[in-house]
Length: 301
Image (cartoon, rainbow, N blue to C red; front, side, top):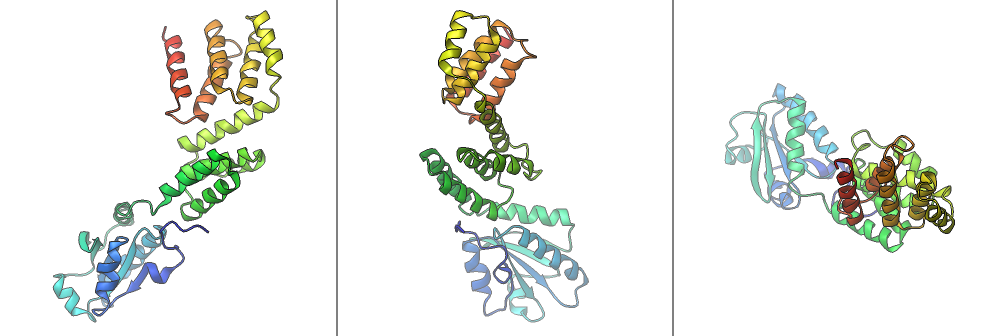
């Protein structure tokens, strides 16, 4: 599996540990230079500590290496407690880059704990996942589809709800002509990202790939459209064939012309197909931007 700078979530001893006065500098101050460290000051006799501690541990574990947690028994480490002026427990401090950056006293609700940990998780960035996604996209663009698929899959092992990686893996399967696998991935997408732009784009690409199977020959369809410009079905089929052959801009132009001639033909099929193509492209793709502007001008003309 690829390494992206995050510690494996399963390495519980690394994510959550007890510290002492002898190891506090290493466990907290030095460690916080790489990843935020939550310090839980507690004692065995403290009732609220028995509730807060496990809840914090669960939230830290769920963060999958983006934060760590260190526990300080104040009875056994009174010097640390005195230096940090701990007056009551439970008290929680968060350290980043060697300094305390946040904290709270007393037990708090589960939603507040999650928000606290989520906020800290963002301090250290994405652990290199963004760079890994860029590398996978470059592999896909350059034709190393197997390498791209492997990288996207490895990212999802680190972060299962990463929409960019999920959509990328679907597109990699499509590039390998594995439509069934792509459909299975789309059907099982986590609810939190199922309707994200990245996953919807992959879904649109799957729809277009399926249409390409039945697309006719471009030359014959073009001749038919030239001979009979009002043959809307032929023009629609020509757009499908053009897209299937990689001529995306040509497909968009034919669909725009069909929309101009009869926007209501076949229950608005031209408009629907245009949106499918636009959705399959990146938002800043010039073909999508130009096509959307032309379509909008026709709609509101």
